[in-house]
Amino acid sequence: MNTMPLTEEYKTKIAMERFSSYVAGLDKFWKSGQHSDLVLACPSGTTFNVHKTVLCSQSAFFEKACTPSGFKESVDGIVKVGYEDDLVKAVLQYCYTMDYDAKDDMLFHAKMYSVADYYGIPALKPLALTKFEEVARCSDPNITATIEHIYNNTPEEDRSLRDVLVRVCMTKDLGSLLLDDAFATVFATIIEFRKDLALLLVGASRWIGWKKVQCQRCQHIWADTRETIGNATCPCCGDCLYQWDNFAVF
Image (cartoon, rainbow, N blue to C red):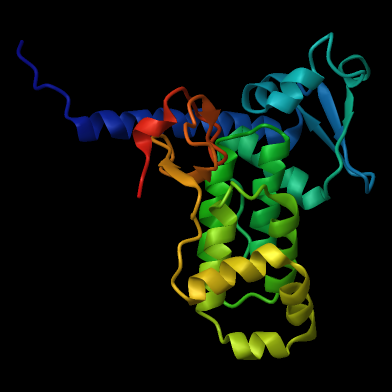
């Protein structure tokens, strides 16, 4: 009996249904803590019962922490984490479901980007960046705290959050912002932020003396001062390439 070949649309639909079913199963264990074999302890005293296999599959940090030759926590079964409860919860939600509940708080998403970097969860960084950019387009009372966090917790070569933040600031009334004491203090003390904003104001290139390349995995554009970049890792998604110079952008 002749059968019609499956269309790409149908194959995609089936794949998405399988993925959704798989995630739903993991989400059930995440919410219930059933069969958990590891405890994460936050500074507040809050604990999360989690599964080593899930965390180790997503995070280089937890993979190392759970190996016999890793941290002492691999024996105790308790890992102390140094972040607020809501950040840890969101990171865990991502590890189990590949997403986390969005908040209308640009500072929260900026922190998620940093936490993803710290725990070695490269695929979480583009997601946090996307959520950050969506929220940053709206008015946010945390803009001053967000500027401080980003410029104090991201390396200069990782322009992901910085570029979005500076562009957003340009869409606002800078005169009114500078009348705010907190913003004025940040503007006066964080030199790199002031420089980025000034360069954008005059339409100058931020990349004088830098080589820009574009990641072929996440499409993030980043820069390096080396004439030949060669082997390096994308600061956004963690993808490693040996010939970044082939993907230079101008």
